Length: 293
Image (cartoon, rainbow, N blue to C red; front, side):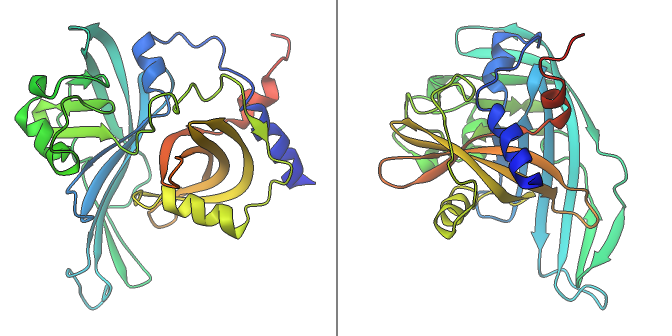
C-alpha cells in the first residue's frame, strides 16, 4: 500500500508543472540538467545537477585503487559532496551568459574514514573550488567561439572531431580551468519539457529486469551518486521514448543519508539510452499542492 501511495504521488509530478518559482529563462533551461567535468578515462569526475532558480548540487569522486595501506587494502577514494547557487545572470550574446557562483561543501563530511577495506578522504569540490563567476554556453554555440581549454576538458574533439556547434549546454570556470558539459543529449525534439504533458503513467510500477537493464545502461557513467530505481513511473513517446523512474539515491560516501529523485532517461530509436535530467523528489511540495495558503 505504501509503495502504491508513493507511486501515485510521484506520478503526479509528471503532470504538475512547478508553480511560483521566480526563475529566469536561463535557469529554467538549466533546471534538471546534469553536467560533468572529468578525466575522460573513468578516473575522476565532478558531476553537477542543476535545480530550480540556479541552485545546484554536486559530487566530486576520484578512485585511486593503487593507494592502499594496512587498513585500506582496496584503495582510496577522494570525494566531496557540495551545493551552490548561480545568481545574477547576464546575457553576453545569443549563445553566452555569465553568472555569479557560490559553492559550499555539504555538512557532516568526515576528513577521513575507512569502510569495507577502502579509505575515503574528503577533498575540495574539484572544478568549482575557486569559482566566483562562470560562463554558460547554450546548445548551438559555434565551436570556434569556445576557449581551447574548454574544448579540451569537455573532450569535444574526441567525441565529435567534426562538430561545428556545441551539442548541449556548457559551463566554463576559468578560475579553475574547468569545463563542464551536459552529456547524453537527446536528439532534437526528444528532450521536451519534462512536465509539459504527454506522459503515460505505468500500469505496473514494478522495475522489471528489462527496465533495470535499460536504467543501468543510461546511468553507467554516473559514479558519484548511486541511484537505485524503486518504481517505474511511466513513459513519453518522442523521437524514441522517454522514461521516468523514482529512485532511492545515495552519495557514494560512508553513512550518507539516502534521498529520493526522479530520473528521466531517453531511449533513442537505436536503443541507446542517455540521461535527460534528474529532479529531486519533494514530498513536501506534493503534500501541499492545492492546499489553501
